[in-house]
Amino acid sequence: MKSNTSTFVALLEKTTDFDKDERYMATSDLCNELQKDVELGPDLERKYVVVSPFSLAAFPRSIRTSCMDSSTIYGIICAAVLKQLDDKSNDVQSIAVKCLGILVTKVQEKQVGDICEKLCDLILNGKPELRDIYSIGLKTILTDVSTKTGASVSTALCGRLLIGIAQYADQAVKSDTLDILTELLKRFGHDFPSEHVSIMDLLLKELKDDRAFVRKRVTSCLGALGVVATDALLHRLVDHLLGDVKQASAASSSDS
Image 1 (cartoon, rainbow, N blue to C red):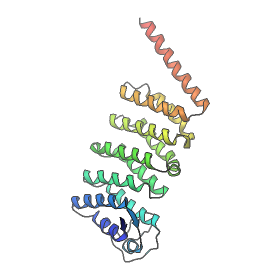
Image 2: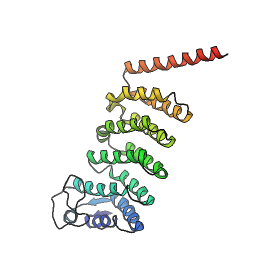
Image 3: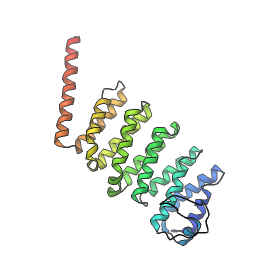
Image 4: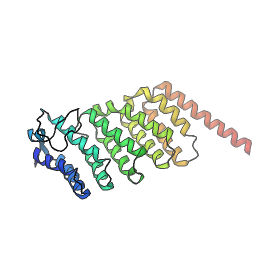
């Protein structure tokens, strides 16, 4: 079954409804429509006008016509859904994350980067009760995004995750950022070698954390890093770990 432009026009208008239930249902229906064969045409162009790439203006109505291809129209949809991540309703935010997971295979690299950046920011600073939703959404995107697109956004995402690991002591934030960095290294670790030294230095520092859950996740992350690291960096990592083992052994012997 195919979905046409008029359907998207109606749903996009409802995503800004004052009633949170209407906003939720509109986004849920949007998810369903995006999974169909889509025929996008000038109807959406007559309803929405872009004044800067992939941002909404004169939302939801405009009499101005703009010539837009399907990627631009998907960008409009993406901008509308990203806006819902700031919705006061937890349910609307949750369904918006699901919708972004579908959109990530349809939009351009710039929009994928925007999606990843927004979700990462919410993991660090968003509602604690929705952090699992944000985290699962970002992990899903890392799994589903194309190799080319993932490679283009991985460096920026890595930088955001390192900030979360280094600057946030909260247990949930620390756990999620370490887990996501591990997944990022597993799939796209070869694409941001310039960050490998910074990653290793930070992880070795975090390995001394008193909390077992942190050390466990750091160990997994170091394992993922070791697979993609250069031989020189891997040797440095192994030497450091062996040195820690020797120090711990010596301390244990002196105590006994």
